[in-house]
Length: 427
Image (cartoon, rainbow, N blue to C red):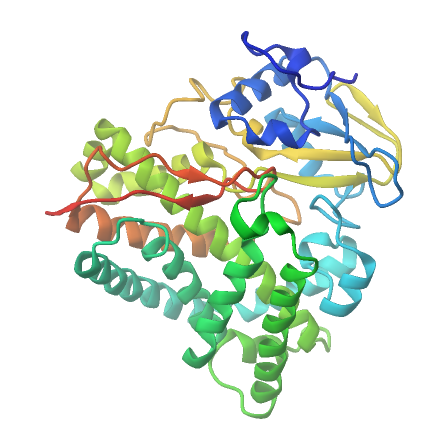
């Protein structure tokens, strides 16, 4: 089935208005996009969409949209049919970019992915994680001290952005002298994310994001050489000196993994924190419930924030063998896109899915992926960061209902917050 392209309209959203391949769809207000996903979930089988601009071959590229919770979860757990290679993002990474910068673990399958994940998993020792947990609490306290002292009008550049970045850098063992440069390169790379760019980002300077990535890779390569010679008690040392079946990370693999952490560990967490602040400020009954017994409700609150905001909107998969799912049969080479933003609002799984409810149970959201071999390896760390920061913010600040609406980036990849107007009184 193919859904016709979106046109100009002054009427209620209709199925024929929905086109997930049209960049203009992703400039619609978020409620309209969620309404479109609700319409697609009513279909008997996943709809097929074709891009207007096409792929590198010049032909329009098609994909099937998996929008139901059951379908997204099933595809995530069947890598033998739905592969992450050659890439989970749109467009897929170019072969030359993989050769130069290394292939990201999220784009791997089978033993190649399993071997790399084993090295990384073994490096996350209980001692390392225990130290990280204490460090997160200390960082959250210090960053909220700074928020109170500086009173930023925009919440995003402060604690939400700085906590996950500082946690990753501390965990990896990135010296302080490198961190301003890394933060700057992240900003440069993310400036070109989104389907509708603003200001100088509209110029689309070729290779700007790749140049930023290259600079970060150089930093990581230098640190890898240093830690092989003089290891310390940090993640870089553990990764470059790992001995899992005789394997350790090369400098290029280390750089690729660090780049992945900056997206999976920094961007997603900062956006979840921002959405969480907005949701709690605009749902005072939920804020009051969390205040009444923080330790009791914070785990549920974090899960509900992740479900409701869904920081990563979608990942794609490539069909490798003929198979059936969700009422449709797929052929090798076809593309499917897993829309987590839709799966997390599926009426078949979540009662009143548009309602923000920190007591929701069960809450089998797919905010960290749908399970299977690619389930988010940093999910535990992200939860610790959110719990620590919300604990500091909500016990020390009186967050008013006048927290402004977030300015979102028009993106088909992540639910990114560009800015969040913010004011408070001390409690």
